Length: 255
Ligand SMILES: C[S@@+](CC[C@H](N)C(=O)[O-])C[C@H]1O[C@@H](n2cnc3c(N)ncnc32)[C@H](O)[C@@H]1O
Image 1 (cartoon, rainbow, N blue to C red):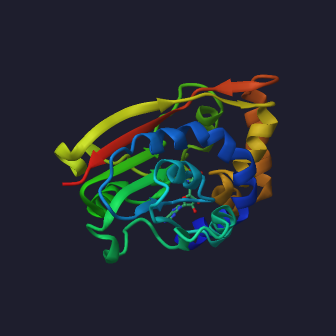
Image 2: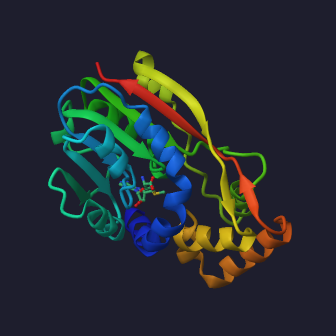
Image 3: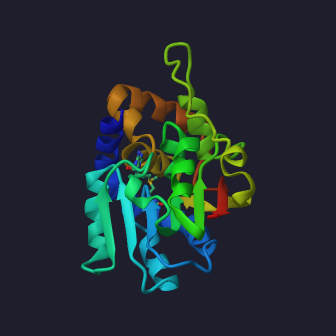
């Protein structure tokens, strides 16, 4: 499962950096802006992808050690390009679903954007990320909840790809964050920004080649992708398309 996902993100990495990173920037800014005063220690970035969090974190915390972790070697290669020899930053290939014990109680902050919803057990991941904090350390996580919009391209894709009788795999369960973080939870709110595409085909091709549909596209093959594309374009509006999907931002403070 992890291997397939890693391969899909390897495949998607260059296109993700070019197409999605600029469009997702407001959410990365929101996650970083939610982190303020920090105790000493490194800042950990689980599911860093190509590491768009890096520059924004360095602006806020110029002297910190900043460590990205991602499952996909292809993503980490691009993260290394972004790091460009800066000694205080590193990106490592690894599974961020449960952090290595060496991070426990060691981090000033854990910041993660659009990784949590991909993990098989998000509540367990949140708990592991929280446990990595020092007292006073800050957790800031942005992720896609199970419903992000009523209409728009994400909703249409969800509709077209949602499990049917022939494909009964359920979506990842939404984490019980209140239960996991309890009183440590400071914020739990929607993070809504606009994204525009030249047209529906541009969206679909980026979503299936360099976005979250890549793993399904590889697993199901070209004929499946072509059929979903046909149905997508049949139902999509003509011309430029803008939507305002609602991600979820949560923050917590280490005890
Ligand atoms: C949508 S990208 C987000 C990347 C980056 N944080 C951003 O905001 O652009 C999701 C990333 O999560 C990574 N990922 C998925 N499962 C993972 C896991 N178990 N451990 C570490 N990374 C994982 C993928 O490889 C991918 O690079």
